[in-house]
Image 1 (spheres, rainbow, N blue to C red):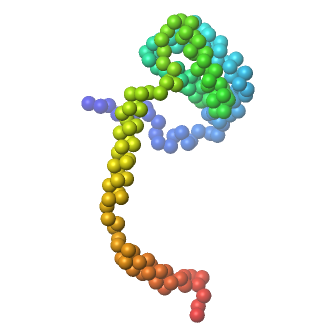
Image 2: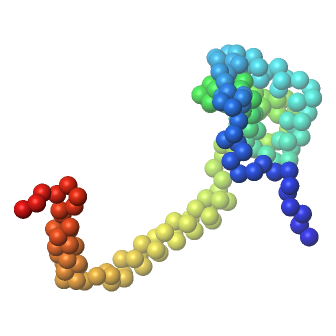
Length: 171
């Protein structure tokens, strides 16, 4: 038996907070790339965070995913803006890879081309799209040309009859 989630937010609850009550609705705490790096580097260099980071890397989580999650959390906490976070992202990736290399941990960067996905899912989607296009071109049109002409003429006649409207001129 599945129990209902009774402590979940109700729909629209996020729209009831006062403007400026959320961290991302206020000016960021750090405004430059240098300030943001001064925020991240000591945290990543601490032993506790480095151990957790290495554990996550050993589980197979790509470096790019970890760095993106970190900078997104920084945006949500109001530490920095989206644009500064995007500028810091390559530096975070390099720093995480340096920490993993120093600990001699094998990791995925997330920058490699995933051959497994490219060979299966994307090719299947492209083939499915091509088949749909071929099928569409083989089908006969819904209306023949003379029927389409009759429909268009009928619509034009109906439009002329209604052209007067409320503000139309009286003849």
